[in-house]
Image 1 (cartoon, one colour):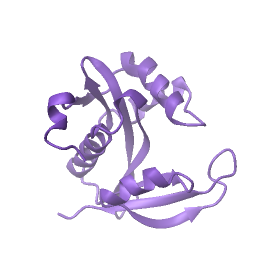
Image 2: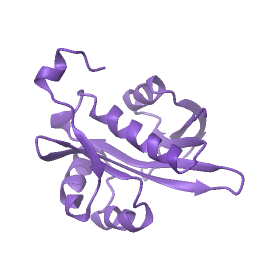
Image 3: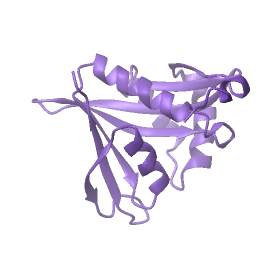
Length: 161
């Protein structure tokens, strides 16, 4: 949570759509954040697949975090899917992740999604707490989801219109 006195120390970042020139920094954040990072080509491909739901946070002129989401139409509903999300260790605990996630959720709602889903490692209890504080609920578990055999917890948040 950002406290009023924190704003004097850490100005709020701007959130904008990602551009291909952001890839190098996004990949660096990914590598410091995950044990099985996406390859640079996957991030580049995401520009063509998810042009409206790919954002970065910029602090002091530097990319401090990113979020990539996609839309899935089941025929009955449209769901947002949070695909990848990271904040540089130098910029964590400043509310940047929350701002990025809120911006993505807003875009999903603009594109008529009724909910958003994500997968998180069962061992990543810090991330699970973060998502729960923002309204996400546990839905089910997928065994052997990650390359090392670890299970994923699927979490969802339903939008109220």
